[in-house]
Amino acid sequence: MPLIKIHKNGEVFEGEVQPNTNLVVRAGIRQFPYPHLSYGCGMGKCAKCMCKVIKGGEALPEPNWKEKKMLGTRLEQGYRLACQLWIEEDIELAQDAPATAASSQNLAGSVTAS
Image (cartoon, rainbow, N blue to C red):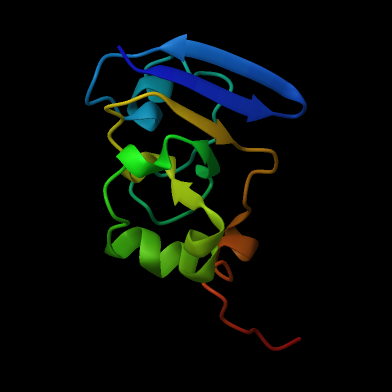
């Protein structure tokens, strides 16, 4: 069973999940990683579940179009949307500051006028 480690606010939380598990779905039904994983829509539209992959990224599939649209250049920095990942192998993630709706719209690198 995959071992999940989540770094958040200076703490590390870990637990095992069944293979082919979506962490946001589990959190939504109050199973680990709940309450340690921030999330919102569960559909790749809000980026509140954005995490930096510390270890285990090589076992993840390539980013889908939703991740490419929402994260843009942050993908190159190791960020992924937890709601779009089905975990098959051990993974270590960091999530320190949940994205707000306003900031998530700018994740892909678009510029907004002030």
